[in-house]
Length: 460
Image: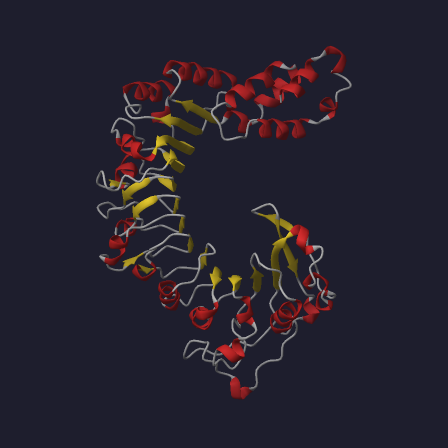
């Protein structure tokens, strides 16, 4: 940014520098990228944009993304941030709606911080898009329970409680109850907890406003039985998180009536057998399928979207547990897609309702014969099953057997460089299909190869 602003400010370069030929919309996008990084110096990077020229100043002030963040690094002096807030409001009358507190140490959530909130009018804000607390250590989490720091009437789209270092203090103190946090911020829609340790959910209160709960890289998290307090929870995402075994064993089944999306990844002892989710639509997260997960899926046969890693020994049970799946992203033993005739007692191919089939992150390279067998089974025109085979063990009793048909979309996730020499990508079976643009996935080296066959090739 410094090189651009300095060059644009030089008298002899004002006309000839390429940045001057950008229209206002492009310039606004550039300014957003210059100040987008997650740091405590966004204001310091935005301020020089106002000093280059009159046009830059006007465009910068009309770019709300630049000024919507208020970053408070508690290592610095509190009075400094009063001046920053006053300066921000003087530049644009609209107050920032994304507020971040960094480097919180023991004793920092104190009277001085309360005075800062009062000075900036944070207590009177009707809505905050993002409110973030970043602690130096996860053991400092109880600091946020200061009763003076609360927003009982403010709608918060996302409350993010994070720690730089996660320390497992399970043996040194009792679990901190996350309810104390939500009692001070009751109108949170999206609650995000990252790198925290030794906390629990207790069922003493009911939280009506939280619809999305995301727990990532946390240690010793007792989510039961208090998870039932989130009666309107629609999305639950748990990643790289350890859950105490005893908190699962000693808990009865809880009901999450509104939950539609469940994403679990690398989280030992997740309580699959303790959840009842009558509205569940999707189970994702690339988690390896286990016996408790199979039991969960068997009790929720209405799930329509699956993204899981399935091993060979459990593939047959997995097929029967998801009879109505429409979108399947499959990792692990993909051979089961075509070997069902020898590994199960099914009389027709599984997943008869399937609309989209994704083969996820295949290592090593997919063999050509396996790839073509999958394409022939699921993607090319299929013949309806004869009347004698109208009922398959795959389908629920009392329901008519759906007519077999080809999937609408077939995708392969693979490394971009390896796809150039992959034999499956040169298969003659792909000659009649439409290949939309390839979208990059995380990590960036992976790419989605999407194939769609013309409707004339589909079986109706």
